[in-house]
Length: 340
Image (cartoon, rainbow, N blue to C red; front, top):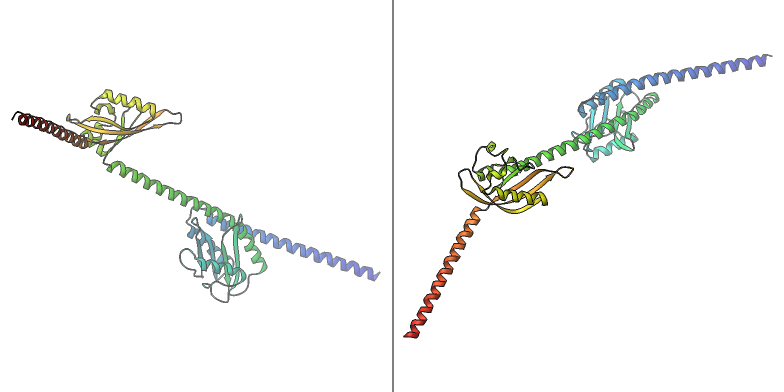
């Protein structure tokens, strides 16, 4: 009877001990969940706003230092350009993007070897930050007055596992923004080069709508037409400046059929009545349905060439006439010799 009572008492003690263990674990899990949620909200909140990378991650470092009484904290992450950068408190990593040597030291910290820019003798907690199979950074905490307990290590490991996803998202957004900036810069430079080509070209460059109404023209074109005010040309039909409007209509007929014309001879008339001999090349711009919406043309002044050709033609004619006269003189001399 006494033995049975002792067994029953021992069983009760065992149940009580088990219940106490369960209660303690439940309490620990509740504390863990509370601290995990608080830490996760702080870390995620620090990098979810429109802050610059350095400022956002510096806030994370400050919070980690305060919560875990750390003497030195370093958080390294990859930016949009793929460079490894770091924010730290106490530790003094190299300035700017971290090179291969610094990255190797961060990787070695996972095995307990403190990086060279950490004070010696620190108890370390080091974590490799990964998301979707990608390395997105490193987190290292150092403390002098004692190692990180299992509860702290588990809390940090859990939070950093969740924290890695937003770091990857931030990196992706930064990379997209960098690509956008590079594209905008390239587009702006291309536009500047095109504008420079348009403004400084030695040939007339113009555009007109489907009805051949001038929409744009460069400075050389204004000079070629003998005007100084751009608005004397814009909104006017191009045929107004052609010596033969009928010839312009013939040009447009060929242009609309073929979609392009190369080296078409055209004579322009300036406001003072003088004429300019030119050749024109033009291209059609069409909409998705194939309708003509714009004519883009380049007109080259060949007046000097025509004048040189005229002079050469005159010289050739003079030479031919002189040669003919010489032949006549020679024939007369021959006839005179025969008579003599």
